[in-house]
Amino acid sequence: MKLAGTLVGIAGVIGSAAVYNNIIDRDIDALMERTKNRAIVLGLVSIRNAKIFASVLGIVGIISLSIFANVLTAAIAFAGFVLYVFLYSLWTKRNTPYATMLGTLSGAVPPLVGYVAVSGTLDPTAIILFLMLVFWQMPHALSIALYRHEEYRSASIPVLPIARGMVRTKIEILIFTILFASAALSLGVWGSVGYVYLGVAFALAVAWIIFAVIGFFVTDTKRFGRKMFFYSLIVLMTLFIVMAFDNTAPNREAPVMAPIAWL
Image (cartoon, rainbow, N blue to C red; front, side):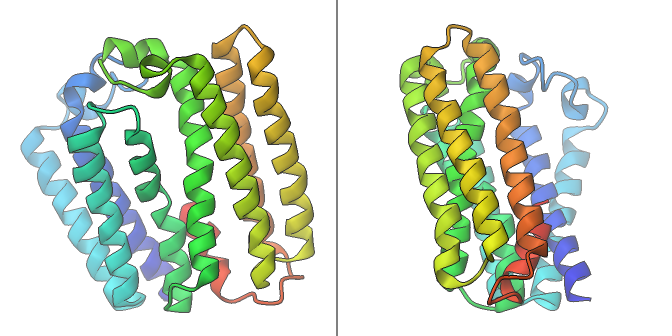
């Protein structure tokens, strides 16, 4: 029951934030290839109905987390909602290339919610898991910006490749890839993951770092960005699957719902 209630709660809060984001970004979504066919942009859903739907989703999500998990879990989910809708979508996204960093904070909330739903506390493992997702999202999002920078330019969104250039973007991709590797491997210090996870994480992280370094020597930036994007998905999906089923971890209970919540 806790698993089902937590998943419903997370889905409700995330869904609410996504709908509000679609409402806020409907003007720039119409200018970008990957978002121009969204229901609100096409007028298939009215703004009024979208707001009602988003509000219902959010309320149901928070109530579900409060009842089936705990109040701390609901509070963390609500904080992620505020970060994404108000601080990211409404304020920084159109004004600074560093809005991506703010967006990663809200994007790292779902696995944190899953962890706290089981453990009921914010312990070192929870913090490391959160940082791991923050650091993963930066090269993931910047890779998208690399191969879709023309769309962002047409919508006047100052992502890093436009505001600071391709080389600066590749430098930050490398830095955050290294930080992600450090966070992913440091989970082993607290006994939250097993030896199988650590071995897989080490191999994937080293490959990702090498891939990021190679990016400085390629001329086809779009192709590089697209490959980095898909590899980032493989990295996270693989690590979360291994994390959930690695029986060699000394402490199994708390982390189990974290990857489930994000996936």
